[in-house]
Length: 501
Image (cartoon, rainbow, N blue to C red; front, side, top):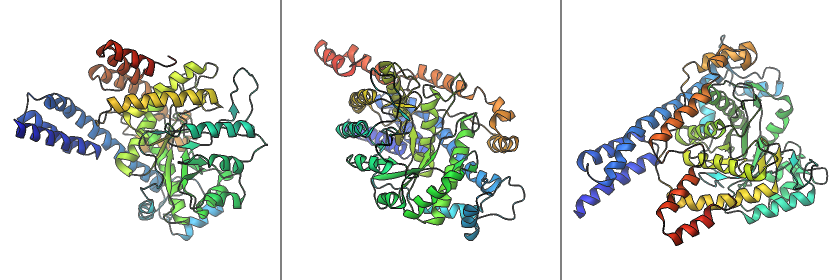
């Protein structure tokens, strides 16, 4: 009996280990052996469920591989429009990076072998990596929301320092401390960074408004990321050329940001959106490695979605889904360190409701698994506002959520069922030729793609109790704990987990 149990556990542990490595078909074989040889064991009951999921997860990984492949094809077959930037053109021409024989590209295409050479230079390690599901602040909302006051303005020096002091009290909840809010003229960006340096773990700031000497402060600092961008809508941003190249030449750790919006500045299909964003971030990596080989680059592809009203909406349930998919692309396929967005809300004037909605978003992201996540704490109004009051409540909620997660967490990957789009490259080319996504037939054909995606996930949630629901995964788990606990234990759980609900 003891030997039999040992064999079952060895097979089960091997399956879990294969899942952790994203080797889903290997895991499937271990689960099959359990169900075949030990069909009455408790492990076999779990294994039968996992066998079905292994195929779904393998298919999902296949889609991410295709996204990675197609993103590279965007760069070699369609190209990026940098022809009006003499400086960028000179950098790539001197490196012999441009495919001058390509007559079909719409913009400036890269040579395939040069593209692969540069991507091979990008490290998959991050010295101050806070690990999986590391939630934090970010986005630099322009306005500070002040309790009981209607005046909306950036934070003053005193207010910014108070936010930093508060963040330092919640280092157990914060995985990354990005610039939480814009500041007024009483404090410069560099002085803001000096305050933020009190936070001992990973931090992020943008240096584009700093002097050369100030920007150089971050060179060689493993605990800092320099948030920068260069490419949008497959073209360069003229105002970002000099600050981007300066950060690269200084050797600052780069967080390469792309905030393309589905149906607005990029394709409306999830796969198409991820492909364009990935291509644009990869192009920034190529430039960075060309100028400064080996420089640390964090993939900051942050896909955004429009709400029903046609405006950017961080309350839309598609926001955590598409960012989870972006994270999985990097965790499962590229191995690149990455930062996504989530945990925010479009709510402005109802802090308790904003806190609850933010928690729901974080829980969805946590259940699918992300890497470094910005915007999760303190932001509201679709990243237009920062609230210290909400920030504190977010951090408290995160402490409670992590307690629950440590007790309930499993090592299973949950299928995300990313919708397939076989016409991604054709769609991106059409969008470029017609000038905008709104003019493309590809956009019209995928206008309901996110709705169908959520329906697929909702149907899956009905079948398996560990599947993340879009409402609130942890709340449902807490209720189950309360139902199955003793009266005394239930009272303790109620006090711990339903704070402010």
